[in-house]
Image (cartoon, rainbow, N blue to C red; front, side, top):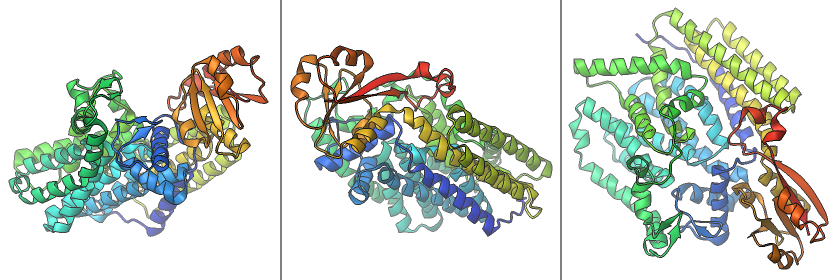
Length: 558
């Protein structure tokens, strides 16, 4: 029997406000190298060169991610200007659609209480806070996939054509965001449901022909761009490949090639890489999810044994089978599983609503308290000790956290189940408010390329200037944030001609700068210290060992 859950509007409004504030504060963080800044730089280049169907990066053919993120960001740049707020905005709005879709999906199969629990868990897991400021394709993919889940579920329950049409748009947009994986998640999740419940009429449904037609029509512009940019030019040499087919790469190699071995992308992940990645990205709910997953599997197999065909298994098998599928890939990153976090949230919401014993809820509450205390301690350590900035701000947020948690725990009108949800959501929002307002801005001061771009832009307002990057690689934040033209040079003899002209700068490492500093008259110079902040290490976080992890660069003006 499902416990009766009373959601107070004031609690939900307060949680929504603090969550939204934490999200929005993250909008003003400098973009993190490498993926987010590369996608932002591609979108910027798309605006400047006017090429929509053919995608370029630094003037070269780009063949990796589909163009939906670039298209929406380019449109946002046209409206709001080229900045990181405008880059994040489209993905954020589509993610909000995805969160709302979680609610609508749950309403179809369950009730309002489980639906509200699912969106609280979804919106307040660490993955969602992270992907709203470190915007990659996964943020938008998650929104489109969950919208497609809602629309297919609505079509199953109402048989209305409008839901099938919206479903088709969602699938096409998901594929244009990150490739066939956007379709495969849906096929795996709903296909499992249809097979388990023996709903053969959903599998063999001629209406899908209409959906396929709509999807194909929507995919045509992107497909034409890939064909025109790559398939018509076998002489091109891209990413170490001679004459790659853009169509084959997109529809097969990019996703399935990493499993079949056709793709040369591999980072040799360990067997349980995505498992331990999920455990931190689903915080603070990770430990609670383990028994929820076991319970969902037990119920599903019992239903199959008893031939019960009415229950929802979309979220369970959509999560488990897709997780296993991703674990087979030769190239894995933590954010790959972010798209199925909402499915984990639905399972956890179901499980918690079925807990009959108050003792079990109290155990869950203890786990949440322990997890939040640990996370708050980490956030305060990073802000107040590791980077020693905004201490008063962090203490104010800590005070807000303590007051909020006190009211939640002392509210006798809230049953333990509600306290687990509200405490976990509120505490996670406050933890990320500390991270977004204090920690990330301090860490990103060690992302030298963006800091260099900011300083040049502030010092030299003339956008007709030039930056010569001499004999060193440079990261994508320089492409996105710098208003000047960037010239890469490996030839010391060419510097003499390149240096002639107004508003010319040079960026290089200290060893190369020592070789040329006596050959040219530099007006000023500044040393920057760089660290790849997307891969934090204990040595970097520790102030005493941090200097050993930094790489010095020199910026000088001719």
